[in-house]
Length: 140
Image 1 (cartoon, rainbow, N blue to C red):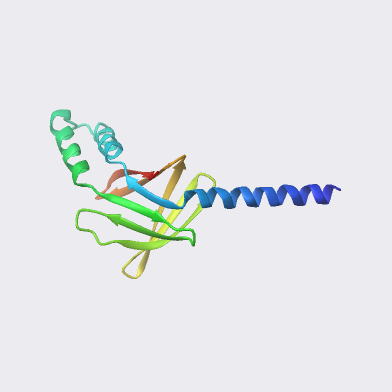
Image 2: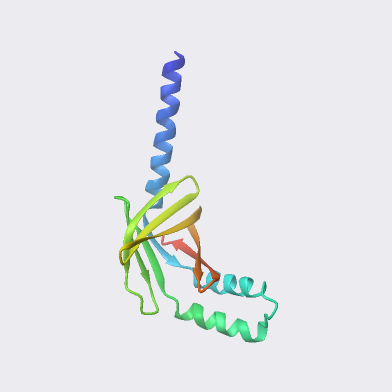
């Protein structure tokens, strides 16, 4: 009896994990408003921060940023990032509220660890020593 109950619980847990990964499949767009706000929040941490100078720069960069990420059911991923960058292909896997997307940069794997928050996936990339928060929102 206890073995049957344990087996049922285990199957339920596996099904729940599988379902949550399946719910992640789809296309996500870069949230440019969140990108701009994140850039300003990071800039405020610097002693030389000047909002009058930084706010227009962050808004301009956000307008130029175009990006999307497609997570496919087979575990493959395609990242489309604007600003002249070529599409990147790779793989993805989720574990609870964490997601890892791995892409190829030349001969090396580039690993992007993110956090899942409902229909949002958040990453923090390192751009020239400065953290660059990226938020992707699932298309409806």
